[in-house]
Length: 364
Image (tube, rainbow, N blue to C red; front, side, top):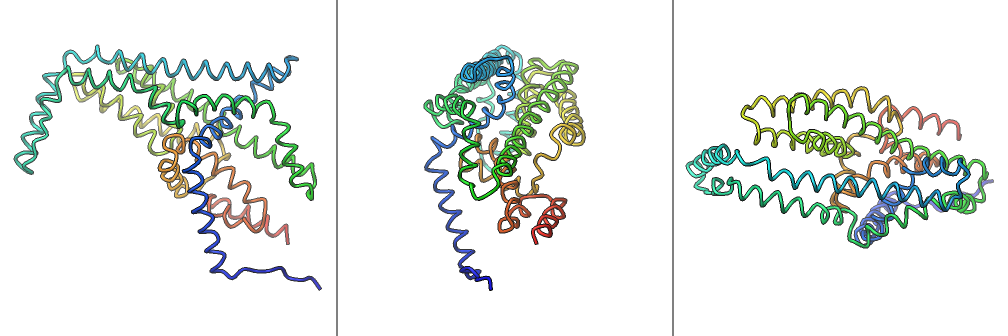
């Protein structure tokens, strides 16, 4: 007769899960300065693994291929930040003729708020050219500081390429470690599962990058056709922000709308920017992402939205970027065991229910 193991009462299970969540969140907050660079390094390592593999196929030693991949990554990041800083600094030359327009709008707002609420924000004074230029110059100078705050600190920015290099260098070794940990399982099965998870994340990241590239081309084309200055900047930024669901597309549309409102003489331009951006988003949501990214990340929309809020509150922008692939990996891991399959059901979409039920039937 098979002996039954010790079974916790339901209330103790719920309590243990709650304690685990509290400890996990505390650990994530306290270890932010180390964990954010660690996760970001893994993110970039997965993204540049195909490039490293390509170098190795050319008979280049792994150490050298990892260094070359790292240098390509650093060059891309530095070039992107330099492009943003330079463009934002040039914005100060585009606001020479908007002072009167802004002053009129600001005066109307001041009069309305004062007559209805008795509040005088003095927006008319803040709408001057000097104030706008000073504000843009400050934001242009603080972009580097914002990027550093995103990864935690200057030490975090240094640790990201270090972690990326070691993840690339020891990617096969880490797989072997996982096989040793699960030595009671079939090594080939464990290796297949690990490879599957790595390919899941890699396909997701590469798919997102492809979608961002196509969106950048579409955005730049639309903004250029409307005669919006700095169309390349707004198009690339809007495509990059698309990696953050819900919040990113909103900010990506808001920036060119405000800029066209300030620099153009008609409301047609901000409305046209909004219309063109919405059409591009419809193409992205109904064609690009389903075809390119596919079913790599089948997450419940509610869980996705909740994850964005939690990731943003714990790790800021970095948390919002990393939370989606992290949840996707957790969903795949939870599906490996019958005990954790309910959590996979919670994270996944409704179409995943039949898949999980089939796994449970096969295990019986």
